[in-house]
Amino acid sequence: DFGYRPEQIPVTGLSRWDVLKDRSDLSHPSILVMPTWRSWLEDQSDETFRQSSYYREYAALLNDPKLREFLHQTHTELIFYIHPKLREYISAFHADDPLIRLIPFGSVPLNQLIMKCSMLITDYSSIYIDYLLLERPILFLPYDREAYLKTRGFNFDYDEVTPGPKPKSYAEFLNSIEGLLYNEMNYVENRKKIERKFNKIQKPCSEDICRMVKMMCIR
Image (cartoon, rainbow, N blue to C red; front, side, top):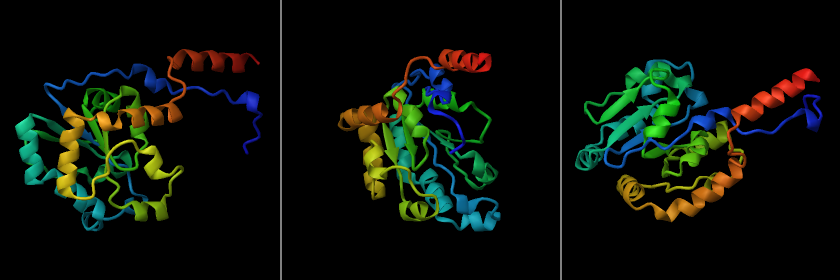
């Protein structure tokens, strides 16, 4: 309780939503891999970070020969974008392949990456809630869900609010990617349901926010 009355708390959408437009191109598809941070890895040494399951999982993904084969067969680009709280560790990752790009935080505006990509792969990041507005497929990789639940926790039931496949094996992971890129009708209605839950206000929000701030200042 911060001492505000209900009438002092205007409910708006987020102004960053106003610029989101679908700029994906299925003739040149791209996949954005954007895992969230792990609080237990902040300020750790490089050696400790490299020993973590977070590093091992994503380093293996970026260098998997079957994934690379899929990317080249489908002419798909994969973009790995590390969370800003772990950006100092981006140099630990390597991918010697022209179709895999490792993008340091801040080097490319995130909204441009979101609008361009044909599909999002994430774990627990709330970025998928923004991405729902673009009505494009999402794949979830909650490989350390129990550890994350114990340290950070969830505000909602994870399975109920994540509208996309959660593969349990690497073969299933590759099949899910192909299925979502080229035949992803199974999750369309589920995405719409979750979008309505989290993104109730979808009209241009910047104007409303400015108007409400002005009204509060006048008071």
